[in-house]
Amino acid sequence: MKRTFCLAAFCGAILAARVFAGDADTQPLRLHPVKIPACAKAYVCKDLPYGGRQVGQGAVHADVAQTYDLYLPGNVGEIDRSAPFFLFVHGGAWRHGSKASHAKLLVEMAEQGFVAASMNYVLCNPKQGGTHTFAEMLADIDAMVAHLPSLAQAAGISIPRIAIGGSSAGGHLSLLYAYDGANPSVLGLGLKHAVPVACVFTDCGPSDIASPEFIVAGLDWQKGNVKGWYGLLCVLAGGQYGKDDFRTTVDRLAKHSPVTLLNGKCPPTICLFGETGEVKTSKTFTRAKDGKPKPYTVFWKLAGSKETPPESVGMDGIVATQNYVTLTNGLAKAGVPFAARLEPYKHCQILYRKPETRPWLYENLRKYLKGNEAK
Image (cartoon, rainbow, N blue to C red; front, top):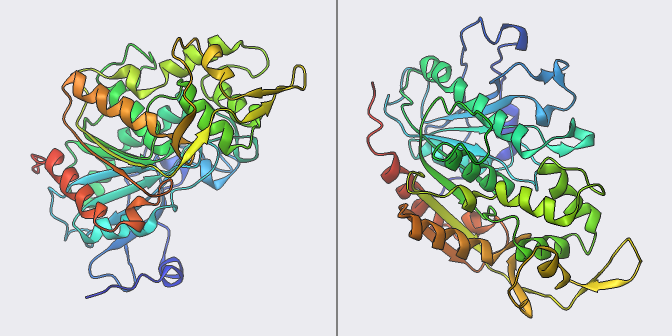
């Protein structure tokens, strides 16, 4: 039977289940799930806190508050204690986006028996709370994971291990967080990883943000705006645009590239990437120093690459296909189990444009989460 998802009715039916920031550490989490209209058995709790940074208490914008939405395959007390748990990290080029971006997918996951949470986190956007870094974003994910035992108690479920994943920038952060648990010395952030990651999913998330291919793809996406793209990456990696040389920034970006953290202890990885065209590397951008146009190939030299620049870069949105190749080759070399698909669809549209990819995702999540028996 075909199910109709009415977003307006869904939003209108939602009630917030809140524990205010000042009481977050002392009061038990209380869930008040709301039945989602036109869905067989899915429920939702909106705007739950996982930390003290709430609007008016450290967060100047709702999309950077430490809040999440929770999707449940039944009412509290009716859920299988061993239901698989999935943490979703939204995309938006690390600058935009919110936990509501993939509500349709997460509702369907709840109907398939998953408990799914979609979280907000700090963004690199002055209008939404400041120019935050990858490290600060990962700290928010770590705080959400540390909150999961409280969530498990409130929902009456067991969360001994989790699946984590996201789209675009959220896919990059999910990979980075999951792989840090297996190789914490690279980032050196002291993340606690309170609940182990059983597997990680990336939907078009970049795996090698230091590669000239990725920088070129992003530069083309920003229509040649070096400050808008390279400047963003510089700040995200903990540097200062205009003060750090290109080589220093590339080294920092390499450190924050998931492929750098790969080793045999990394969790199984589910990769979904799109391939929809090419960028000619003969295209030009205007360099601020002299105002003269430079070809995209200049980034191969600046990045220290000894490879001859290709005539074009395969890409999907801001994510070069090279990221898919690099990630899957790295996983195979490290001996990490993985499932991968490369589809001819635009950036982060694959799950919706090709419906059979969703059962493929659910099957792999269940396979790698197998053994999450209730404790």
